Image 1 (cartoon, rainbow, N blue to C red):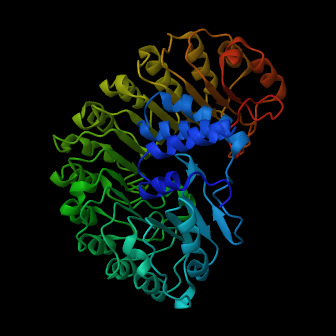
Image 2: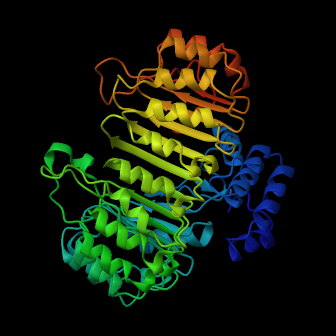
Image 3: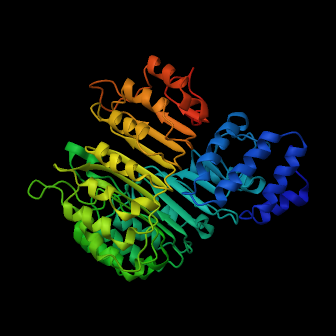
Length: 513
């Protein structure tokens, strides 16, 4: 392999991929050879991986990584120019994911690539109607992603009978339209070992599928993703796929396999208030740290959209979430108060909430006054009618750890100008490093105030876009006149990254945009 480091060093990296030491020695080695950008990228990505996702230095390191990837990008010496193979992005300094367009290529190309790189994960499409040969195992493979739609039970049988599953620790079946009987066939595989992560997003998993899951005794499962489409994904088309209901939630709550789960996604599953309550109260789930429950109560003609957040009143007393995502719901006073006062969110550092529709007076103000706001590091607020009132109260509190804010709207009358003006003229936000404002009405006066503010001394990244009048779902860059004014403002001088959708004026935009 061209430009391979000393054999002993390369062997050390491959022998212990989880270790950072050999990777950092490799960075020193390529730096001595003059590849300073590549060495810096390795060190930066290793440091990012060592830090919690909510750590404030993640913002600074991410921007550093963006600047380095502009020069180094993806294809390095250890990646071979192999036809029909796609490579993932570098993580901790090296590419560790590959993809094949056809599973029949696995036997010919998979082992060859895994033997000569640090790749330990592969993405494949489904084999159609059992036409593919069973996939061979490889001792280095740890992650398998299968994409596309399952056509027949034979597709699942093909994967279940493939020895490739024997070393897999992280299994993802994405948008496969998998149903309960097919999931049961897969989980009955004689090759499937103990998983660390099982990701089944956007499938047709109803209560029967939950039965298939709990029949399998996984030990050490840390991540479970059962998310599906929310009501707002379907909108007027209506829901025509099965989901987990309160009964399925009860079965899941009784499953001992939940005891090791730290990350759980249930978006779109119709748990309703009753199902969420029984899950939050489960003693098996008291160690959970990350929860996503967007759109778990569809709109109903007779009942509206019940507020499931009231379930936080009955959360297990030992449950302490680090991150929470909720939305696609109506927010009642009772729900807002239950969440605001729940010990389960007392250690929250990341909050995502969006698609909240509420009558006047706004209920999100109750959340703005909650105790957990003071401990937040990352806050995302999307498509909330009264968001500007929520933001005013949050900004007045100046949370001491809040380093990342993002907000978007998807409708041109969103009052982002109120939010920006409040941010520019309100109390100093001492820790805010990243600000992203997507769509909505930003306004020249508000942008002018933002550009001249001294209230954001730590800000490093500003990403801002606007939406033209009556142009729903059509994001555009800032008008050139506004972008030039912001580009030449005092605030812009301190920024590492300024993204306005104007290529001639943007500074260090996110890679891939």
